Image 1 (spheres, rainbow, N blue to C red):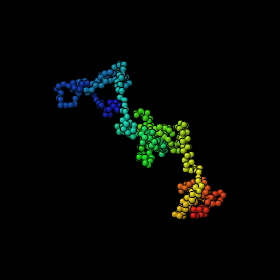
Image 2: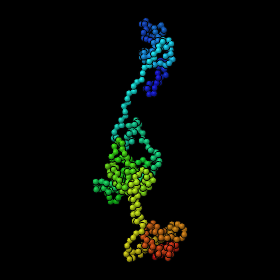
Image 3: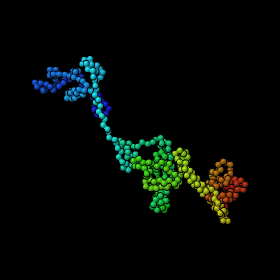
Length: 368
């Protein structure tokens, strides 16, 4: 028997061993004892010979019918020389393959993610969905952070601020809500890490949010909650500028304008010079308060005064200047206005360049 792959039959090497095959094994006279199974030449009347085989003939052998449909060239030559047969028309015995039914994927039942549900339809033992390891390695620990507010018809939810984090390694999003005192809302994690599909996409073929969908003013619909992006950190702008081919130029420009204004406003508030109208005597009061604060530090720990001086005397020249004094006051949460710093330096030293030595700094701090 000629076996084919996946034919469903056990691969026995031989179906019938080599021997003389009787034409009708059961055509035996009744005088033959029925208790004997083996037949001898005396009981068999006729055996199969080459003249009994021809193409297209059906030969019964031991109760089974065999159709002869083809033969090799040696057999054809044998029948031509001994029987004068010249026509050898082979028969087509190939079975027509049945059209197998196509596997139809059932509709998404909204349990778990779409990839996980699809794996249960592809194999009996579901396997985890394949991951893009190249993308994960290239974007490991790269997170784009945006600030967003909730756009809701409910007055208690409208205006709530959130931090939206987008992971570039696996396109998953996480949303946090910073706690706000006396707001009546408990802050914390608003959305676990998951991929979010766009509301306009089909459930069977979802289109997930990508980094191109986030920009200043973009409206993101996440599980029937609308968020409006109002800001982003500087890493987002840096990433977009490094991958300009993936983002529209208008999106990058909006981030540049927004972050530039925020940076300028931040510098104006925290580090820039403030133009304040002072009343007579306000400057003296501020200088006295700064000296009182420094004197309090000297009383509790005299060595700290020297440590503060040496910390800002990085070049070891023995002097500090106005910029060092401003940084020192900023670290102690003291006023850093230009007029206050100038008044402090004027009381510390008489040097025209404004350089303060360690002795002058000690005298200024310890004097009453």
